[in-house]
Length: 353
Image (cartoon, rainbow, N blue to C red):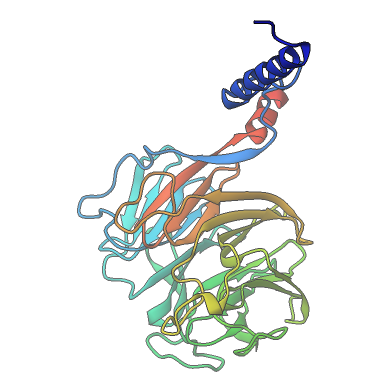
C-alpha cells in the first residue's frame, strides 16, 4: 500500500511534535548555549545546629519574644520561660544567662548607640537599662502601674535611641502612642492616638531611628510603617507592602522589617482582636530610607507544634549582625534561629577577598 506524500508529511510533523513534547516534559534545553548558573539573588539559610547548648533548666519551652546582637557580636535572646536572658556566641556557645523571676512578660531586648542594654517588659509597664550581668541601672515608667501620662505607660513594647541619648518608646499594647524620654528618663514629649490617619496608631509594635533621627513605627494593625521627624511631625507612610512586626535599622541605614504580607480585617474572624495574629505567612524586607525595596525573602511558616528548622511561626523579633547574618525570634516556635545569607551577597564577598 502506498502512502501519499501528504500523509508522510503529516506523520513527520506528528513525530516532531512528539519529540518536542518529550523534550519539554524532560526539561530539555531550549537555549542554544547553557544559561549561566550564577546566583544573582540573596536568600537566607538556617544553621540548624545553632545554638549548640542551653542552660540547665533553661530549655526553650515558652515564647521567644526578642533577640539582639551586642556590640561585641554576642547574641542576646529573650524568652518567657524560666531563664529569660540567654546569651550566645555567634558560633552557638552559651556565654551567660540570668533573669529568673525578674520579668512579668518579656518583650524586647535592644542595645543603644553606646552599647548599653535595654529591656522592655510589657506587664511591668517599664523600659529598663541593665548592666550585662543583670543589674538594673535605670527604670523608665512607673513599675506595675499602667497609665497614659508623663510617668506612666500601658504595656510598652519597644524602644529606640537617638544620637543624643533620647529614648523613643512605642507605648503600643495598652496605649497607641510614641513617648520620648531624655537619656536620664525625663519625659520630653508624646504623640499619637488610636486611629488610622496620619500620626494615629493601632497597636504600634516596634520603633527604630535612622541616622538622620527620623522615627519609623511599625503600625501593625494598620498594616503600615509610619515615619516621623524627631519631634513627631508626620512625614510619610509605607503601605501595601507588609504587616510589620519588628524593625531594625543598621548603621548604614538599611531598614529591615519582618512580619507578614498585608492583611485585611475582613479576612479574619470578628472574635479576633488584632489583625495579624496569627499571620498568614512570614516575610523579611530590606528597604532604603526612602521606602525602596532592596530585598524580599519569604520564609516558610511553621505549623504549631510541628515547626522545623528554617521555618518561622509568628516571627516577633530579629537582629542583624555586621556580616549580614540574621537572627529571628518567633513566639509560637519558641526559639531563636540563625540564618546565613547565601547567594549574591556571599558571591560578592568572595570576589572582594
